[in-house]
Image (cartoon, rainbow, N blue to C red; front, side, top):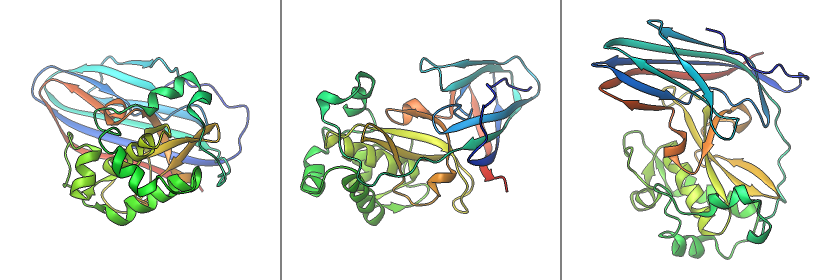
Length: 274
């Protein structure tokens, strides 16, 4: 099925082909909620997209309260279930402002304040002392968030299988291992502990290793806008196609499953169109 999106009035930037294939073995009636649609807004425009379900079944696509993030919900009977999402997305990269400063709390927009608070996976209250000791004396602004990324990249080992769905930023700080989600959680946590609003970003990317997967990075609110960072340095941020943003991983999960189903394969990619 084709999905309707607003046609852009301009055509600058880099175009990407998104291809996401998810396969599940369903053992009984199961409800699914997917967040796999490319974000249609900010610095990217969805030119076209389609959703193919095997076997065919009714599906409902809706916008979340932000009106930017789109979700798909459906109910699947027993058997093998396959979902394929494809899209063409054009990104226009904003120039990086290395001098962007931290915004005083009293000047933060109302909708940004929530990204200062500790959350389930980002215990900024528990890591406040560590953040102050490591980064409290550094020059504020973009340079300080970059220093946070440098520290995470140098001190946390990227190792697939070393964390679980319940691993928090505090666990990562202690264990010194994790995957992209864990790197992003720790970046968010350190920023919030320093009174810098930060949030998790999930998207499509293109990297050689590990096997294709969704990519998690984070954004910090600097100079009056959201600025993206990736402490893993595994992928070109200019090639990241955003899906959704949230306070931590529980807000940006690509799939929520309510029933007896197991994912057997996944292959989400974003390839530049030359």
